[in-house]
Each structure stands twice: as structure tokens, then as C-alpha cells.
Image (cartoon, rainbow, N blue to C red):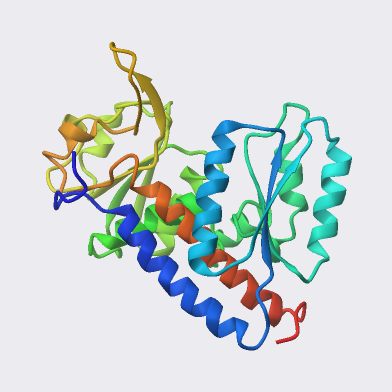
Length: 296
């Protein structure tokens, strides 16, 4: 599998273009008022989280946005974590707050996401931010969901009236992605683990977006010829020889023979998610100025 194959949507190329656009906006905004820093909060050490943080740090550097990595102790209490977040909400030098997941079992992640002020919620995870999508206010949408839509737009397909099947209905990806697609004018069917005859739905779609966390769930018999396939899944599999690989929810090598466009895993949605995070950060800066939080 090579991204040079015309069927693959190159997420890294899309990321580079978006980050260049963000960098230009950051330079323009910094001419009148310096951009604050993005604060990444990790609670307790985690190798998986560390990978995400490194990718975000590289994206911030490419966009020209200061990036502050904070590692809070795993034994921190819910009350102390919330207090620290509220303090950052009030700081002019903090542009946005990124709460890395997973968190320790005693931490209520939804409560902490709710504590991040919507104007500093660059991940789009505050319930108010997700609720804004219902009203077509999509400028600070959840990053992975927005990345999926960005990659679908990359195909050049007309979004208005496009028949899309969203497989997966999580609060942070599936549901927001469905609302974002509807805001673009697409006709969206949401499928999940209780859906009967999944293939019946997916085979009629012009585009299939899948985010369920089940390796190779989607095979070529489930895709209409020429359809676009956006694979958000990230799964770790071990081959018989012990080799560990990252694969998506789509059986990519087989489905690409049927699909018109498909995102590789890795190298598809992941890089674009980072770029969307930086785009959200610039939007946050603009909205903080508009709200009178910052003096332009």
C-alpha cells in the first residue's frame, strides 16, 4: 500500500496545506496581539498519550503556536484538576487547553472537559461546543470528526445531497461527524452495533465514514463501487510472526480495489486531526478578541 496510489487521500499532504494556512493566520494575528500558548494536560504517564502530545507539539511548531506540555500526577484529585483548569481559563496567556485521554479511573473526564471554557476549548469537547454544531456553528468542532469531513471534501465530491453512511455513534466522533456532514448538506444515515444488516446501508452510500475500533470490519462487499471511504479507526494487531501493526476499521488492501477514494491508516485522518486542532486554536484567538477577553 502506497499513498501515491491515486485512490488514497494523503492526510499528510492535507495536514501540510492546513498548517500553512494556519501559520499565515497566526502571523497576521500576531502583528496586533501575540498568540497565547496551547496547554496540553496529561494526567499520569502514558506512552500512548505521549505519542499524541509529540504530534500535537510538532503541529503547533509548524503553525507557529506556542505549546506547553504539562504532566499532572496520576494521583491528582478531581477537585484539584478542575481548579487548575479554571485558573487557566482566566489567563490571557493561555490560548487553549487540551485534555489528553485516557485519564486515571478516578477522574471524571467529562466533568473536566465541561470545566474548559468554550472559548478555550480547542478540542471542541465541551458539551456546549458539541451543542453548537446542532446550530451549524462548526468553527470549533471536535477535531477528529472535522478531520473526517475535511478529507471527504478533499475528494471533490459535491457535499450537498451526498448520501453518507456514518458507522459509529460515539459522542466525540460519530455523532459530531454526522452533524458536521448534515451542516454541509449531506444526507446522513448513522449505523452502530445494533444496526441490522449493516452492509445493506453501507452499499448504497456515496461515502462511508467508519469509527468503531474494530479491525477490518469493513470489507469490499460492503462498499459501492467508486464510493469514498474515510477510515477513522485505529487498531493494533499482531501478525503470526509477532509483528505489531496499526490498522483501521477498513480492510484497506481489499476495499481500495472497489472504492474511488480511501484514507490510509496510518497517514489519513490522524495528521489532519492535528491540523484541525491548530485551526481551532486560531478560531479561539479570534473569538476571544471578539468577546472582549483580549485586546487586539
